[in-house]
Image (cartoon, rainbow over all chains, first blue to last red; front, top):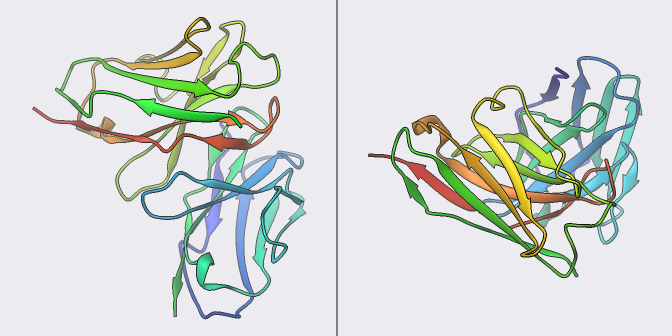
Length: 106
Length: 120
């Protein structure tokens, strides 16, 4: 099984901050990684697919990068609507989610 | 626009079988272009992928639930189903159905989810 280790579990930030969330795969998943945003009581929303591709309609302040088995989601300038929980997910071999990162107001 | 809607009993007794339905509108589950998945989320916890079904009925369930989970479909009703046998309180969760944005890709479309509580 492929394990996804996401960090940090919680992140406190202010509006306008640059925020980075990291996800590490236990083995190679090539670029088959997605990032989702989830707000309380709602289904997750796809932000990034294939490690770096921005889903249609998602603001350009969201970006993804990859270095080997380490993946990063960056929010360039945090907006009030961005306070939420973020999950990474691999889909190289079946599907596995990371544990999630809650972005809260500092 | 494709929409997914989960439905189910809300409350299930321990050791019974949980049965959920994902109704798909605006698109066909008979398309060769997508997998249709079930995912769950325990209260206050992260996301857990349960498994998927393809248009031809081929399924895959995560090993952690494979012995208890069955995914099926009815193409005439355009519905996907999840049956989870011998449930315990640990199966209390919000259950989502989701579709790939394209075959083998990330989950591009999700249903709103349905809460299932296992309790006597």
